Length: 428
Image (cartoon, rainbow, N blue to C red):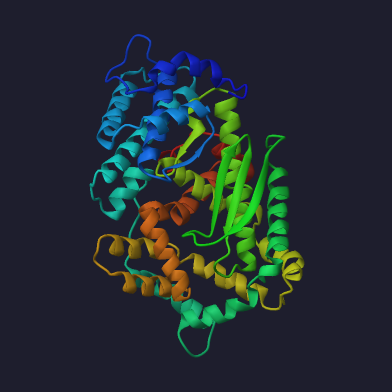
């Protein structure tokens, strides 16, 4: 059990690993419900590969889930029972963290129930699904709402031919050569880490490994291993631009996913013994905070012109690139960011069957300003993760607004968020 504080709890509640009862007993508690929530989540992961994004609790709990996973209907009944038990427990406590813990578990069990209904065949609209899984209902604007942004980009990158082709040609000058990718990424992550550690204390043993992979629907992924360690993978199938080195270093590493998971593990699993935080279900409100904070972390670590200055002085020389039009590229990236939510509308139309695959790829190419092959990869992501895409743009904007309302020390607000069980509904 690696000496964790949850070792004693594991022995005390091991008998609760099976199906939960539908009502509380005199001995029921949040700890008992949390243990059964972990079992439920691990067993859903056996029914849907990828549902469990990270787990670093006792190995025997995971082995039990693999050996005897309940069926989807049985798991749905288990989620219903956990909700009933949580609702039956007292809602008041002297410790605000305990009050929030109950609320957090209720929200995550509700998301698990929604995912189980989807696995059983229930169809939801894009917005309904996003709200059921992540606790936020996205606004779906008509694509025409984004045309003024395309017009501004058209003026910034003039010339003949399709705008997507012109943007691709302009950005081609900033592709990191593959034989220099390791050095550029190492430098970017090191800078992200240095800037984060200047404001947030991390466990002394925190670490990560970096690997380049291919044939993935995503551009980067953090596989948190527990013990403040992460495995970061970068998809090298498509060109990686200099600004993406910073984006990926912050998002997957510092102060993004690696920091978030390390702080949650330290704050809750190690210091408090709250076992529910030893498992991360991908399709849950946790992901809205995780992805939103990881994206906001880019701006937090590199405010104003600091990103483009770091590219010019450090990354461009390492990549062997000319920084002459770096500021214009930064302006282009800022405008492109204003297009981020267009894909929500595109995904809504595609997943509902109103618009076919090829037309959806063409729409993504137009509104994300990427070549068709890259747009096809993004549609592959939408096929796989569906409404999860709201967690990036909408998540970033929501997290940014909340953090900056907490006061002038935005790093302090960020640390508070990353060390908490704050839910998306709490960020309004």
